[in-house]
Image 1 (cartoon, one colour):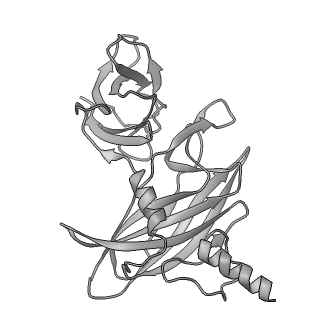
Image 2 (cartoon, rainbow, N blue to C red):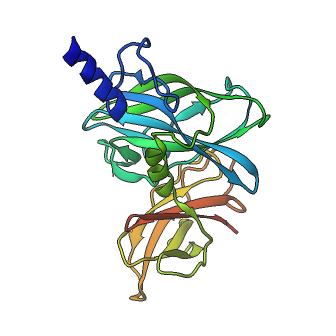
Image 3 (tube, rainbow, N blue to C red):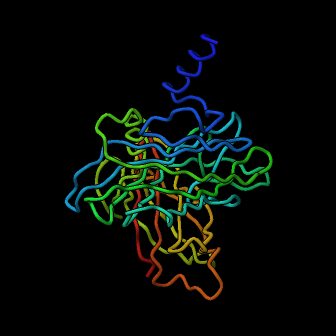
Length: 284
């Protein structure tokens, strides 16, 4: 009995296992794990921050995956299911901003490429209270997919009171995830890692977009449309002049019925050498 109790205590301290029953005490900075067959999810908290916009609570959705399984980014690529996060049942919450660490691409098993995360991941959250003088309770209905050779749906219902405590033991996990979120940039920025230019090219007879990225390391590039209904292809490397830039191209395919590319605002995310940036641009 003593050995079993000690083992449960160590697992709770390390945060490395999902607890089997709701009767076990949970730290104030974590919700209980909600387990699925191949994954587990919980809410975690970090110290709040004061910004020019006011007091902001920091939190995160922590997802643990079994070995060999993956889950998806906000845009899943050629196949997959993006996560759906519903915070509508939260109490005294004005806004919740979900941030996504830089993803990776991997074969989807059907000849295409998916975009997401292999292994465990934390999605950082920025939470603004409706009334800063009252308690905040974050409630999440979370639908996501986990895949190995086949994909299976996963669900979690999570709840956590946020107090912005400076002693949150999960601060490191959230801070690391925040550091992996792509930094906002602009097309045409300078520096060693930047999206230098974007232009449309109709020379091949099919409308496409050509992107030039500056980096000393290999680059992976992702493109998203203005709404989740857009399904743009993954940008592919393109040969170009030896000017130190890495070029990519993607066809203007995957538009929703009735939508036009002209005037649409697209978003590019570039990942290179452990860093990530993203920039929006208008297709003229």
